[in-house]
Image (cartoon, rainbow, N blue to C red; front, side):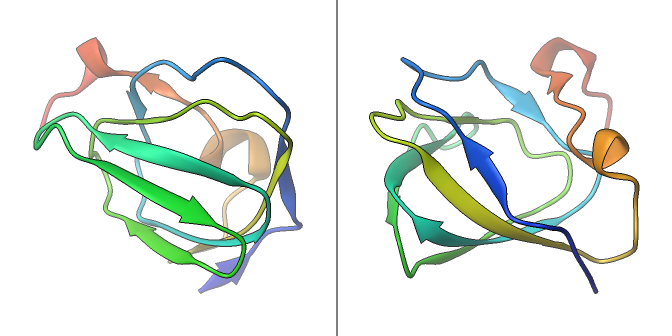
Length: 95
């Protein structure tokens, strides 16, 4: 498992649906938001102290960020930050 330096999402109305090529473990250090799972249609609220696991190639979207949200991210294998944080559009997903 590889840990990345803390990552900060700044206030924004909402993020577009996207997916990541690798599984993501996120620990929310500060703030609150929600995650939308496009397949189930469910929104999961998260706040400081919560840990979430996002499987690879799941189409999702972070909800509105009213105040900054800080995450610690862990990946199953070391990847350069720019490669991991690449947000693939939901239309690009081929399983």
